[in-house]
Image (cartoon, rainbow, N blue to C red):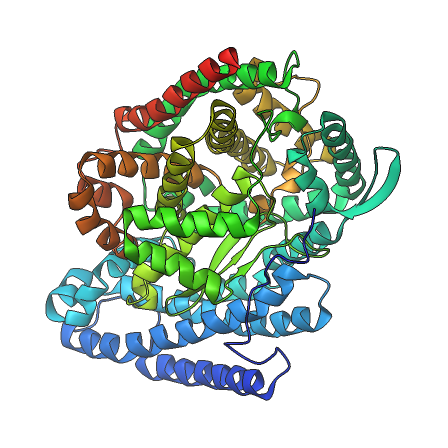
Length: 598
């Protein structure tokens, strides 16, 4: 694939370069600001207290500390994002890795201050504080969550030690995984030619229209993961072992309970969603059978999951995708369209697959209302859809721009809201004027993504839940991890895939296992919540527009059930999730009919 004309993101608007005097000046200012905040914390005795302070004293301390804390965290976020932009695009950049290591040392200090602030706030009479202080009212949701977190904290000394040790523990293993996986080179034979390609490029071959190419890439990928599985298993065991240990010490029932609170939902919400998801699996298997018929094969193998379908499937070159997104976002609002145009014109996007570049796609907030988007763009509807999805995240960041750092915290469950909405706008627009063959390709790309987010995400959830449970007893071997992964895929994909051609090394391929615990089910929440919101938009476009940006601006100000209630949803009941999945079921029926008539 031609990559030289795809855009790279521009970070020079922040600093001229990573080794520039301007960056060094701000990095040193950042370190000094941490010193000053540490001094303020010491003077104000910010830490857990046995008894709440007098409310007037607590108000005075809160109003002195919070503005300085918010400003410092915002400053640090921009510096970290700037450094990471070099690592994400080339993990072999040794200077960037060195600066990130320096940054991580300072982030440990910040994490300790954050823990102390949460413990102090949770020790106070939170409701009295909210009643007496306007600043506290503006941060009421954070304060009430701090109260719960404080109840699950170890002693101050233990929390401090855990934070410091994470630098050489889970954080180090996570960094190791990211560096190792992004630098794996894969040998494979394509159409008689022996090649050596980066793992990201090999995984991109999963969308090649030639099944022999997809199969060759799949087998070469599995062999590459097998060669590197031992150290990756060590990383996974270490990270999950640390999480289990700290979960017990903090008196959470298990990592899932802690994850649910962190993601601003409860067990009733998760159970309702998972109930509806499991009910939907037969429909996704029907889709996979229809896809197999469209491909002219008996049954899909793993390497057929991302295969393009449609004899004349449209190639979406990058510039064409850019213009289409700008135009279709305008059908929702000029604000959204202008924002997308700005992102393209100001070079916020790093598009080409490159050696050393992180696989997949993500959006990260940079500063104020600016974001940066990484993709490994491929000229397909899936590439277009991914671009629209990540721009949705950037639009969400725009809506959060006027919030303080503590107000801006958005759980993963709500972080996908805008991205799914934007993705749906583009998908429905692409379908309108498409030929039947093009409709097959667009619907297939959409169902392919939905299958990943509902079916595959469930398999990842089941896998991680099993790993946490077994890791309480001992470390798991490579073969055990592969067996658990295969079992989870069999439970979810069922007869939709050839059981002899699954992906037992998916635990190696997905970076989410090496970050936060249960970095999976929130994606399903985001998809189905976003589809529910889009259906509401179609019913009442003007009324929806009047509330939507406020919803995005409030994702750090209330939990998910509370925000859903504002739109009339009860997400603790399976019916909400069933209604969203019904949209997908109708797409399956439409796809089956088109394939049958092709």
